[in-house]
Image (cartoon, rainbow, N blue to C red; front, side, top):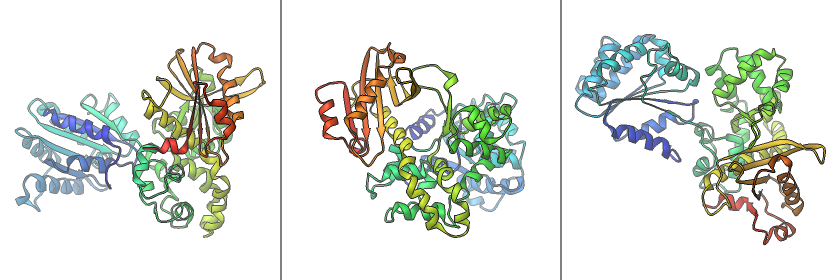
Length: 467
């Protein structure tokens, strides 16, 4: 798969390679996010020993490591094997004394499980050779919890040895859309809402077929590749999988506050905190507080990945239909609820657009932070919410409303957004601007109401998607 939108990660790897000095890099991220592809593209024109660890015995892994080393350094010795991991790795360190060489160990946690002494051995070789070595070591892994513990816990052998780390994250919308050159641009946001930004999830999308047919094949058939994916993710990362699944499911079904999650999951409050912290650290859920204000009592939790959100929202309730081979009946739930589901997805796309264009002439201000705001409207005696508030402290604020609707946005939406921008909570903001994002455009009344004001920006889906 061609690398698209991994420029920052590739540039960092190239910079480390160009240093010429010993480097130990840790590259990690959830499975299927594209780590191996990123590294393979980086090393394709460089002298490299590339070894992928397997879920097998230490002896089997040593055999495959030996083959990788000899293929790269001594191809005439094909079929031979090193007697130990120490001898094998010493050969690599020795080869890097007078030239730049890359050593990649992919799925490093598998090797740790097969041979517990590997991290101590690497520590010993690094400490002994780093001053004279030109080796660039890249250790890569999909088990984020184990990778973080292996290199960040002070009691682990490799603690303090890494010189850099890259956490490879799922693509945002604007990175992911580059893979869909043949798809109607107006449909790509929905594809993103269904599959998210993990390449392995969306790379099987068939551009010549409808979104419906893709969803049925990838989620709702008895052989669907994504049917068991949420369970697989949790099995890889956590113990007590059933409890984590219960907590995750509660959030996916709309329980956003701590007490709501605890009540729906029917688990002790003390345990809920631990589950939430771990899920946040794994980037599976996000913890949010309202933009502009520091109010932890208003903390909300939500699912961070669109594929998982979609699965729990539409697939989980339909598992009986899926397992009884009734995919078309299962799809009815998707058909009825997809537009409503896409509302929060569209908000995230709009926020990403703001960050991409921040500091350009496309926006009326520069901002330092952006996010959702929620609170109360005392005058109306009702809750209030602003989809996106982008601000630069008290200097300026951009108040945004995002509408994923098949109807055009009217002046009533603009008027209500302006009311919310004048709430007492924002009285210190000296310069206010309003912004409406709309999937379907704007009514003539809305355009007339905003014309000539100088403090209103109207952005349609076409505007957002414009190159």
